[in-house]
Length: 325
Ligand SMILES: Cc1cc2nc3c(=O)[nH]c(=O)nc-3n(C[C@H](O)[C@H](O)[C@H](O)COP(=O)(O)O)c2cc1C
Image 1 (cartoon, rainbow, N blue to C red):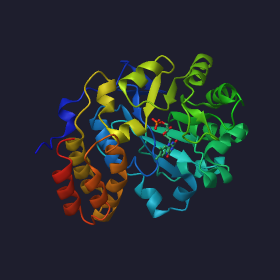
Image 2 (cartoon, helix red, strand yellow):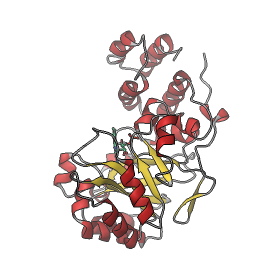
Image 3 (tube, rainbow, N blue to C red):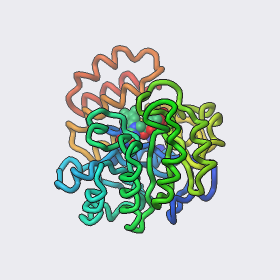
């Protein structure tokens, strides 16, 4: 049964040699996007082994950090694979960010990313995530506060809140002025959520206006979609494409897409390393809906995996049904 670590034969994900965020040098410019519920320490490590140059944590609440919430702290775990690490924070009050910095919990991270793109209603209602697009002065203070730490700060924004607002360029310029070292544009409006195609011309306009690096996020799922977008930005965040096959980083860096079975086996091994059995089993179930996209002959597996309650059962099903994918 093939179950080798993917890292041995992986090309580092890059289409440039020398990409930097502030003073932090990366091995490339292909980055695992923050994905709530997915980019835990195990999946980040898998993507780094597959050639991602950086892997961003899930979005982490600064309030949760300041209340010393146990689950929030769990999300701060990193691995030795993270030569460069990046935490994504969300919140609405600059003083919460200041307190989070002062708590020491963020000291181990090299880069701090701020979520200014989350469209989820309960986040937006609290003035967090993409609500900050409509409060540029607060967003400015948040970035300025974080930048005083001396760590590079990046901002992940949407191209706008509503259609035709044309706020991307002025907002991104304000973030640059506040001290951001990189801006990532998820090229959809908040109102679009995840529907429609990402508007990468807006990302190009932001890149043309800013002197700091600009990253593009949205719809990079193949070599073709990457090639269509690669002159629009300096770096690229890949989300759902990595959930479908983490070796997309190798592919885009000039290597090859790997078979999924050995990657899933490695993912299982990493989940077992970092988490308890319940978390590992439940988390993997979510991943299968992405891993199995476009795969034929997996209907029986899909129905059985939902009732697997142990890692042994999960592994037995994976070995029986997925060995050929
Ligand atoms: C399941 C899921 C969770 C996400 N969680 C976050 C998050 O925590 N922080 C964030 O900035 N964006 C989040 N996003 C947005 C992605 O980072 C990315 O910008 C978006 O999915 C578009 O890129 P893609 O087409 O490569 O997936 C999430 C998206 C998905 C699908």
